[in-house]
Image (tube, rainbow, N blue to C red; front, side):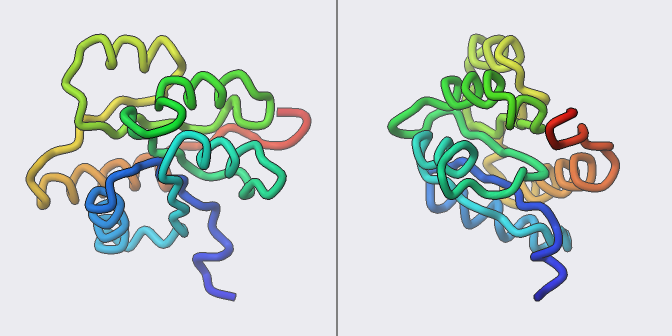
Length: 147
């Protein structure tokens, strides 16, 4: 058993293979050892969160908005409407520059909204800061039946 298996997972909901790889590399480069579970579409993400074989409560959900099958906004709404996942930290990590996406993301319960930088060194820095805040500095909400 590795030390990373003792840490709660990061759920990355992202359909773009390049962005998946960049995010995984950026976390690894910042020595963030939480395992990363990737969902390639909204249906897969909800299965990992609410399905029969759901992963244990993730430490963080990174959600792209433009994903297939079920949109990112709909995934966020389902996360917030389910007692088991209502308090999960959800960070929208997207390339969208639409003001409406920003407004709707926060209205729907996102904890943060981050636009993906195009430049890899900037992307790594954003992921480093995101990881340090959400996985080290932030005190997560309690989990379990009394939460």
